[in-house]
Length: 420
RNA sequence: GGAGGGCUCGCAUAGCGGCCGAGUGCACCGGUCUUGAAAACCGGCAAGGGAAACCUUCGUGGGUUCAAAUCCCACGCCCUCCGCCA
Image (cartoon, chains in turn orange, yellow):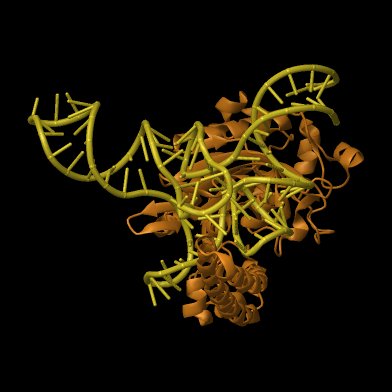
């Protein structure tokens, strides 16, 4: 959630942020009204409660007629306290409901606009020229078949569309990517974590995934669990309701991720670019708010380091305001070159969520002035299927074999993946 | 799935319906002492809102009462034992 102080002191800033996100700016004024009502209700309740406490205390000392009179008065007061209390509770939940709907305040540096309005920050590496090399690149589905690494038919047979099996070299590729990712994250000071992937509503809500993104999360109705779409959720909630005492805290979570992909019918139906279940290594940082900007740059750099190690051409984009998640004030995506699509496609993403998630999850740190919400940031180190796509397509050879990037060889044990 | 036990300020514990927002020990912070440290002693030390008075919070939600950490109900979580199982 956003800082109520900002809302009270500079509502225009919040309205503007809502506007460039394509979210409802009227919420701001509704919340201002609700906030005032809430504070009035609290004051009214507290005055009555103080009176009641005082009167109650005098009961013990009084006796006889005097006592009877006090009890009578106290009884009547008790009813009024009860009424004021429920009015207060109502006003509070009304204000909270509105507050939870307002998204984090966009970084003014972020490009304004929708999905298409991103800004390209840089290009790294050069896409291969297959024409010069004299052969037509195969797509990852085809190479996956040749190597017996990816089986989408059986995935569909068993689980439906957007499911797949990684087999043989495909499965080994996942292990190698994960091990390389965890090894480099550990070296950079991250604590490796394997988190739960079923979480309670509070964790989902706290990370901001139950608003507009709700349609994309799997929910287990019977047990009221959510399947996480990213380990960002359990990692953020890891320190829920805590006052942490040493910052920054950096975690590298390895987990399965589940996405309903609602509203993407017909998009990326071939292959494993867009799937319901995949594994991912995610970086997650808790830091002081004043360090968030620098940390965001660091996360992006670690993502780039990984891409560089995989020897894949890519570009970095600054995602536009309308395309950010509710929690993020700014987001950078790395898009890998996919030869058969003749396009750059998102493979990793890093977001600065400032104190937005920490306020909802009640995660604070202490300094000289008191306790304050921490900042949280996240970034993908490697999302397995998309990285496999990028590797297979970019490093393929005419016979369908695939050159293994240098950095991965120690983890995979071979320097080429050969047709099965 | 069955049977018990428990959830109080970082940890461990004490708490008769009003004198309890709550005692004690450990940890932590500051000080005295010391060449330095330890020990000892003194002081401080839960969180949130509020300028303050004051208000809220003893797992969560309800109830009884003028008044609930304390009584009643429901739920959640944890632990132990039995059964089943990766």
